[in-house]
Length: 113
Image 1: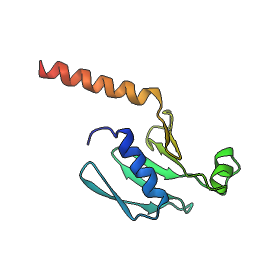
Image 2 (image 1 turned 30 degrees about the vertical axis):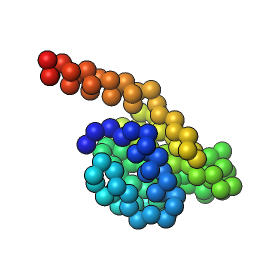
Image 3 (image 1 turned 180 degrees about the vertical axis):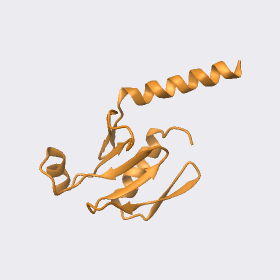
Image 4 (image 1 turned 90 degrees about the horizontal axis):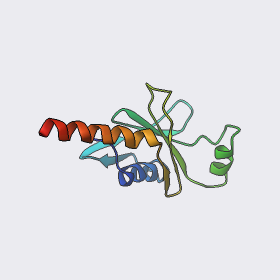
């Protein structure tokens, strides 16, 4: 599976918050499940997307309690990487996500030459 684009990330975010049981991403129907914390989550590629917990003591928890829809994308097996943050319809993607994408494109171009 290829990297997620912003439209796919936003579709995942909206599905986590609108009561959907699944979402179709890259021709795959992916199930939304509840984590032990009670938050809805979804696994895709090597990432997990999860809605913001409302029972923690953080600025994001307070924002979620007030009705803002916030989700996070993370790499479960690599905690050194930054998280993708989605708040409303704004997506903040860490720089390394794009750098890895460019590296993959460069490798494809090189292998196709």
